[in-house]
Length: 132
Image 1 (cartoon, rainbow, N blue to C red):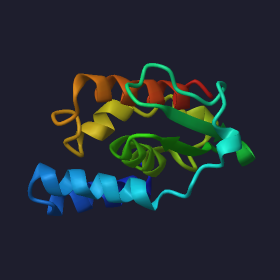
Image 2: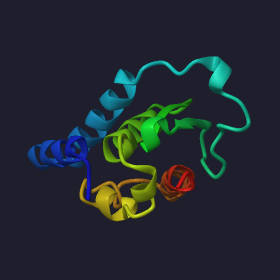
Image 3: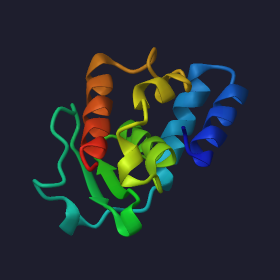
Image 4: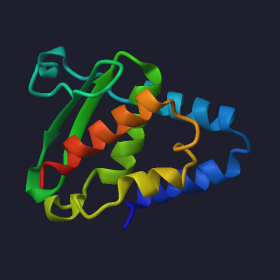
């Protein structure tokens, strides 16, 4: 049920031979994210449960999920970009149906993130899926 952008990311990761290359790719994705307006970095958009500071500003235009995100950790910004590939444009009704951790496992992320980063990733996913 993954989005086309996420499927392309899975294919890219299949070509990257080792985790360091994949890690660098996630970081580059984070660097490419548009800058989130500081006015959106408020308690209501802050994601609790992350080791670093994370904000997700979620909207639902046309009943589809959209979100901006930012973090003070570059790898987490990359994870936000990965989540955008997975969730952007999904109908609000279908967001909760995505098994996001299984989809992320297709990238091999599950075995290479610290326990704190994995918990933060789950917190971001829970926030996104609470919209439905």
